[in-house]
Length: 469
Image 1 (tube, rainbow, N blue to C red):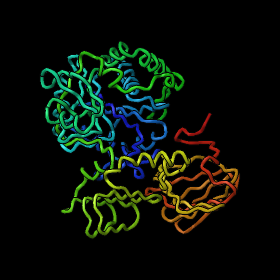
Image 2 (spheres, helix red, strand yellow):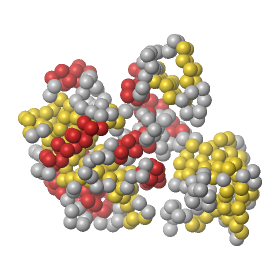
Image 3 (cartoon, helix red, strand yellow):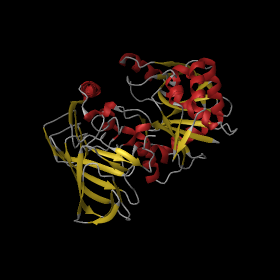
């Protein structure tokens, strides 16, 4: 049995402002109608697999659950890391969970933010790898590179072994000259960060080479708490775990590492030049997404979320327009977007973490306008969804229904509010909003008061487990 483990953590800072702390690249539609997480799940169709297990952090749990629901994919639970501790501990949690009931599946470890264009080639490589993993090998997938890429680590192959090769060594990100030598030699592959091995085999090697990580993960998973689709472990025990990648912790030390070559149009979309490369291009090498008009423009990526972007006489640029931020960069400097992100973090700017449009388990809201004592939001509530029963100490709210029907609770009264009707919620009133209908509920919320922060919410009841005990 093969159990896919989908690693859906990470911040994707090199794709800011598309990717933000609360909505990173694995949840974005970067190359089609599906998000990267959804593409990762759907490319497993046709393989003999168990439903996947997802691993993400607490802040992204509802996004991950909703995106699996949207495409009708079953899963084996969503592991929530209390804190980020890199890939070796995350995979260990999944491995311990996988063997809980006396089973010992093969774990197919995949990142949720990779693009693979040739799904058939990928699935064939998985079939080959599964044979070796069943023989207690720890298999990694090496990408057949077509250029001297300096942004990836490399895997040097050794002697042939069945459909793969013994791993000679793992190599850090090289200089361009060294990377060119690697590609020309034909003996090196890009390190994809994808693996296949028995759960028990991984744990035994982890215990051998990093007993501290093994012990911390074992201790943390002994205290599990499950609610809805989510699996939580002991936070204190997991915080004591060292931060370490699977490469450093296990793969560079084990004597049973095998690499399977993978030539399937793979990309980790690690930056905007990579996004341009994998996007459909016009005759001038441009890739446009959104409302874009261009004159005398070449080799340029333009992404616009909400307005017309026009370019004239440009070449080799990256232009990204979101509802609350605009990035303009030369492709040669695109990797330095992390410097902008670091500046925003230092200034505690909200744009580094939040989009103007914020997703919640019940739907989403878009912060349309704000001032010193007011804020306007467009709120969308999914059919059957309900916001928490709550109150605010510092703000009143006025709701105007644009479409759909709202069931509104204010203190001890309930009422239905329909299109073109409105309702007022005074400061300190206990209230709730629910969509009892079959279509999305759209409304405009006008907040007014002395403090309008999201932390001015006292929750009394919440079907999504957000009431603090």
